[in-house]
Length: 127
Image (tube, rainbow, N blue to C red; front, side, top):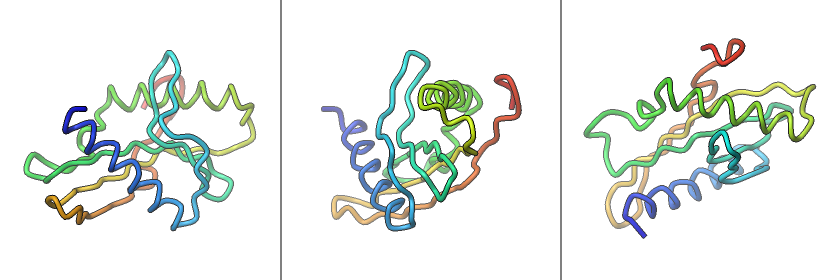
């Protein structure tokens, strides 16, 4: 398995642990449909949170959340709308979070930063 894939998988595990310790209930991991993929879907109170996990070995090239550009946001939104419809979550609020994880070396020390409401959905695929 590629180094980046291993780092990403480790980051998702760290993110799930962090979210659960902070009161989230994990509904799905690596949710996929024809429109895209969402790393983690969880409940924060009554709000459905669609969470993108970005794990890096350093912030040398910018913060991990900067990789969640407009195109990626659009795919996440479309996938989230599909999920909400498939689960009949018509009466639920939702939001889009990003978790940044920077792993510092082989000892697996890391910094984690949860960005709630990292981006907004404001209408038919608009932002």
